[in-house]
Amino acid sequence: MQRRFTVEPRQPTALQTESAVKLPGYELWMNYIENVLIIPTRLDLNQFKDALSETLRHYPHAAGDLCRGEVEWEIRLSNRGIPIEVEEVGTTFIGIGDRWVLQQDIRPFLPQRGPGIALTSHSGPEAATPSLLLFKITLSERETAVGVSWHHTLGDATVLERFMRYLSESYQGNDRGQTSAPTFTKRQFPAPTGSLIERYAPLMPHLIETYSAAEVGKRYAQMNANTSWVKFKVSFTQIRILKGRVLEKIGQTDIAPSLQDVLTAYIVGVLNRCLDVPITSITNAASYRDIPGAVLSHAVAGNAIYIIPTAIAAAIRPPLTETAMTIRQSILRCREPAFVEEYMTAANALMLEAVNKDRSWSFAAPPGKLSVNSNLAVNWRSAHFGYPQGTRFHTSGLSDRYVRVFLSNPEADGGSVAGEDQSAQTLDVFFAVANAVKGKIMDIIATELEAATFPFNVAV
View 1 (cartoon, rainbow, N blue to C red):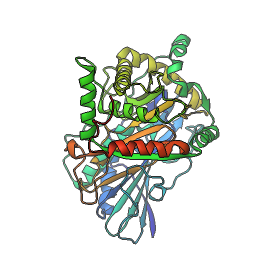
View 2 (cartoon, rainbow, N blue to C red):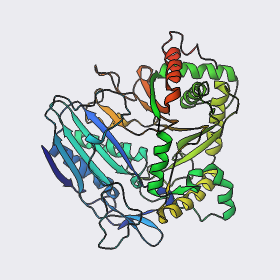
View 3 (cartoon, helix red, strand yellow):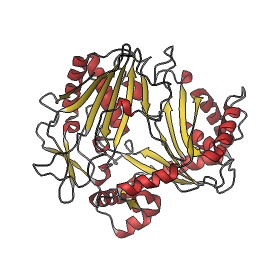
View 4 (cartoon, helix red, strand yellow):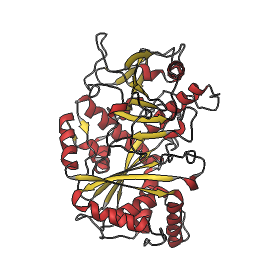
């Protein structure tokens, strides 16, 4: 049985005196972030609707319409109803068969929507744009799946996590006085000079070579043909010990690789034992939200993300420590305020130009390149609706040599609460590789990680 209804923002909203939220070019990520939360109980629909209405009062742009003028874009604050689909499945449990965060297909639990928002959308009164936010609630006898489609122009993963956590707290009736209210004024970057774009172009090839939407789809299909997933779990304790060995080898230094740097370096070492073309280039999807001056407010509901490139030694098997240090050094260089200012000035102009020409960017990786998009800093399970130990988080999307890392879901017996005791937590790690080398890569990882001596059996 399926039902549909809409929920509008409670009035007055946080932007009641405004008509629109202006979107600079760097906000124009024209895709949806789509996730599913599995809550170990049946949620009350009326309570959910009331909580969503209250949350939209503080995030009213999510109930707006994406509009394009002659050049600039904005979200018109139309207070439209957010569509919610409800489906009763009549089974004891929802039906996601395992607890891995990343799933091949979560579409049955996501709201129905079109392929995307047309880049040529204009702001005339006759324009009918798709909703920027949609939900689907799937109810079984003992569980609820909350599927969300969130358009990227509303904000990055940090903003979506905050929105969902606010929704969860509102559902529970908790005091949200400690929750930072979102802000909506975006940082404006100046128009770049031609020489600036020329200098930064090698650092952002995804924005220099743009394609039609159809061409992007073909490129990803070609890249992922004859590939398979690699997935494994590793504990915080194991990675922390491996990091300790790296720091011991480095000695006295002001630069310390992060846990993610060390994990990435380990993956590079495994891949370079198996690939015909070794990994010599890494990109990290990173946030500049905490860099002084880069954003007007840490609480801004927007996209504060950029892509950090790293070139590593061309040796067949560079030491793990050397790779981890090189990654950290490149990240620190790219976190300098002057670098962010220039990088985002160029990226802002290039993104606006591409979108206004109905072009899209592609992250299809050539041989020798590894892309990393880690969610270690995003506690998706904070939106637990009162069930912190049993709530699970799922999403989808993986490509060849594209690394994704998440906090693992709890085991069937509950497990630890995300964010409380890291020593008891594990990480889910995913990437795809060519079918021809998957077996060898899996054998190496299984042999090393399952050994009682890991991580002391890994050369650093």
